[in-house]
Length: 226
Ligand SMILES: Nc1nc2c(ncn2[C@@H]2O[C@H](COP(=O)(O)OP(=O)(O)O)[C@@H](O)[C@H]2O)c(=O)[nH]1
Ligand SMILES: [Mg+2]
Image (tube, rainbow, N blue to C red; front, side):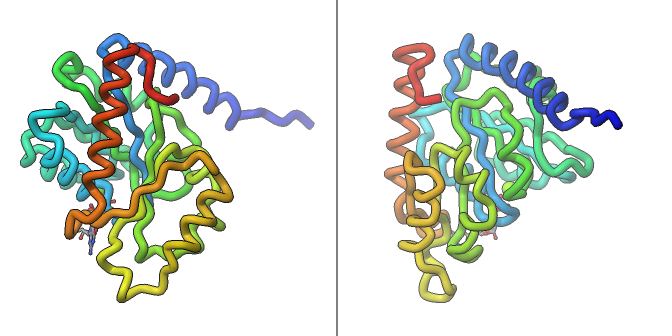
């Protein structure tokens, strides 16, 4: 019997496209984030807050990935940022080819930071590189402190974990200390921010981290942590 390594071939083809995207991003001096989480953890809310918080300091562009609808792209557009909506039509993650096709309408030379909001899913997005500098994930306290145990790859491939919705802590069964410990057991290099996109708590530290990453990219060309 012959086995056909389809999955490996798909991932290899994706990796080639991701490298092409990475070259385009580097040439434009862009810092690029692949933002991942389960549905509703707060990706678009974080982007809205971040665009407002860094207005006049960091020029942010967004690629919105959703199975369908332009709802999130409309939200971002209202903030005055350059935005492209990608509809996967059912696929549970974005891939390098989709990102390549989304770049044309964007004026990359007029951006400092590009954020790709991936499809809401704690599994598949972690497997596909898009050409980003870093994967950043959001886990909200409403999802529970057991998620690192169940979705390890997300935590292992991310450079940053934002623990969102800390305003809800009095109402949900979530121990943030346990969540942090479980995440750090999977990936000791994780940078962790505890935030609330509702109240704004903790967001200034995230903004400052972004300012530093963007400045490093500008200074060194390839300076930001890969
Ligand atoms: N209480 C609370 N709700 C939040 C917070 N961040 C986002 N939400 C709400 O969570 C829901 C999903 O947020 P959204 O940004 O659309 O999540 P996405 O699906 O990951 O893009 C919305 O109703 C938001 O208003 C937060 O920090 N606290
Ligand atoms: Mg969203």
